Amino acid sequence: MRIAKIKNKYMYHTDSDGAHHYLIYYDRKHKRYNAIQLTHLYYEDKRRTAQLGLKLIKKEKFSIFETPSGVKKYVYTSDVHGNKLKLENNDNIEKLSSWHIPKLQSKRIKRFIRIRKKKKT
Picture 1: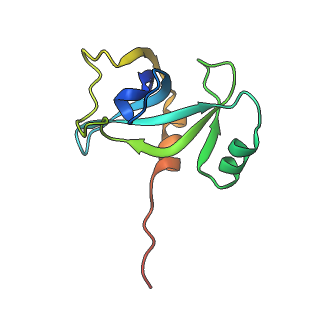
Picture 2: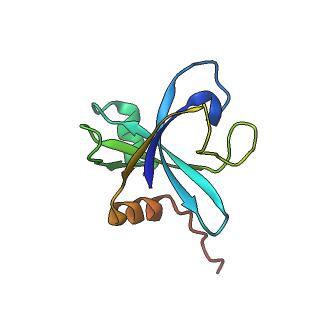
């Protein structure tokens, strides 16, 4: 997993010119890149505290950032037009870190975002 700063217009419909940080990893089973959005937790506000309580985001500390980040449970598998995410020769990716997240932390994050189906009884 690596951290990338991607423009908002590439991921979803918006009028803003901003960008967000994402965790990027390659899914070998489906042969595509996946992206998980991050949110910075500079301070505890009501909305983020509620999301932490409902387990919609998970608090993680990355050594590349000074403050903790919230890992959202949603995974982006395609861009705004439905195409697979591309990392090479893409103007919408502002910065792609060469730094990789440690394997144990990566496994912990993937386990958090995994959607489990309940068995019918």
